[in-house]
Length: 141
Picture 1 (tube, rainbow, N blue to C red):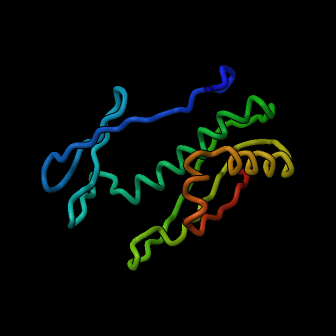
Picture 2 (cartoon, one colour):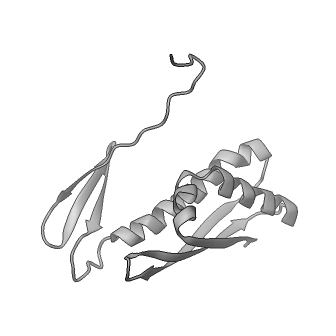
C-alpha cells in the first residue's frame, strides 16, 4: 500500500539520435543540444565527459538557486569552473575538481553554509561523488 503523503519521485527523459559520424542530437522537453560523438572529436559540441562536467555545474548552480531564498543568502552572480581527469582502464572520470566563485558580501561562514547545502542536496553531485574523487572549493569573487 502506498502512502498518500509520499511525494512522487521525479523522473527525466532524454532522447538522442545519431546525426552523422561527427555528432548526435539530444532532445529533452523543448530543448536540443548537439553532442560530440565523433571518434576524432568535434570542437563544435560537448563530448560525454564534458556533458557530465556541465551537468555537475548546472547541479551546483541549481542548488544555489534552490537554497539562497531559504538561507536568505544574497549574491550578485555565480560562476562554476569544473575540471576532470579521465583514467583509461577502466575508463572513468578519475577525479573532478570544481571552483564555485560567488559574487557576494556574505560572511565566510555563510559561504561555507552555502557550499555544504550544495553538497548535501545536489542530485548530480551526489550521483558522481561515490565513484569519483570529487573535491572543490567555494570562494568569493
